[in-house]
Image (cartoon, rainbow, N blue to C red; front, side, top):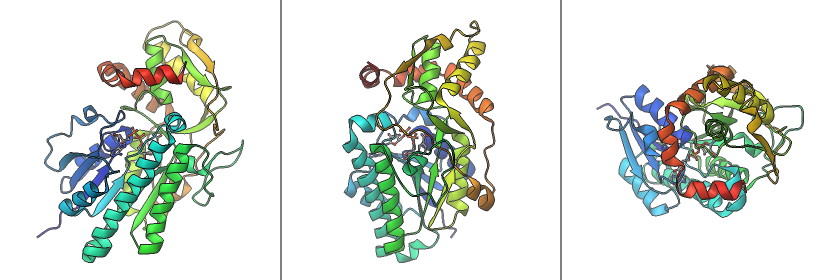
Length: 355
Ligand code: NAD
C-alpha cells in the first residue's frame, strides 16, 4: 500500500500560512495536509475558503502552547512532516506584551519539537524515515545592519526586539534538537513579506487601507528604516522547495534582493494608489505623518539569498511593482475582508499604538 505523506502546517490560517496551505493542497493531492491554528486575532479561515472541503485538507482548531493536545494530535495523525509557522508575529505587539511571544513562539515550538521527537525518535523510530521538522523564521534574528552588507546563513544571531528574541530562541531550540537528539530539521529565515491576506497592522496593508480611507500614514522616525520585501507567494514557493529538497540540519535565507527605505516605499504606494483610485497626483502623499520611533528599531535588514538560489534554483518570480500592484488590487477587491477583521479588538489596539 502506498504511504500517504501526512503534513502538519501550523499557523495556516494566518498570512503566510494560508498561502503555504493553498500551495500544498493544490500541488499535492496525494498528501494529507492538516492545518493547525488557534485562530487568534491574526488567523482567519476566510483566507482559506477556496481550499475548504478539499479531500486532502483538514483544519484543526488548537493552541500549540497546550502540550497534551499537541502530543495527542501527533499520536492521532502520525505526521511525517511539520511546517511550523504559528507565531505571534508583530514586533509592536511584542514590545507591549513580550511574554505572549515567549509562550507561543518559544514554548509552542518546544511542544511541537517534543511531540515530533517522541513520535519520530522515541516511539516509532521507523517513522523517522523521510520525516522533517521545518521551522519558518525571520531575518530579524540577525539584528540590524549598517549602511552596507547582507545577512548570510553564517551571520551571528543578534536579536533586538522581544519578537526577534523569541524567534531566535525557537531557532536555537530547533537546531539543538537536531544536534542533541538527531531530530531531522530545516530552518529558513525570510525577509519582510507582503501580499494578499496580510493583517493590516503591518506596513504595506496598513498604508493601503489608510490611503483608501484617507487616514494619516504613520511613518516611524525619519522614514529611513530599510527593509527587504518579498511577495508572499514567492516565500510559499521557497518553503515548498526547502521542505522537499533542502538538506537536513541546514538553514536557508530567503529574500527578494529588493531593499527599500520605508519613506520611498510609502511614496511609491501613494503614487500607485493615486492612479488606481483616480486621485490627483500627490494627494495620498499628503497623508504621510511622522510618528514617534519604535524603541529598539533596527535600521536595516537585507538578505543574501545566494544559497537557496544556487542550491535549490529559487528566485523571486515577480518584480516589486508587479507584486505591489497585485496586492493593491487584492485589497481594493476585498474591502469586506478588511472590514471583517478590523473590528473590535483591533480598533482598540490601533488607537493605543498610534495615539
Ligand atoms: P500571522 O500573524 O499572520 O499568522 C500567525 C498565525 O499563527 C495566525 O493564524 C494565528 O492564529 C496562529 N497562531 C498564533 N498563536 C498560535 C498558537 N498559540 N497556536 C496555534 N496557532 C497560533 O503571521 P505571518 O506573518 O503569516 O508569519 C508566519 C510565520 O512566518 C511566523 O512564524 C513569522 O515569524 C514568520 N515570518 C514572517 C514574516 C513576515 O514578513 N510576515 C517574515 C519572515 C518570517
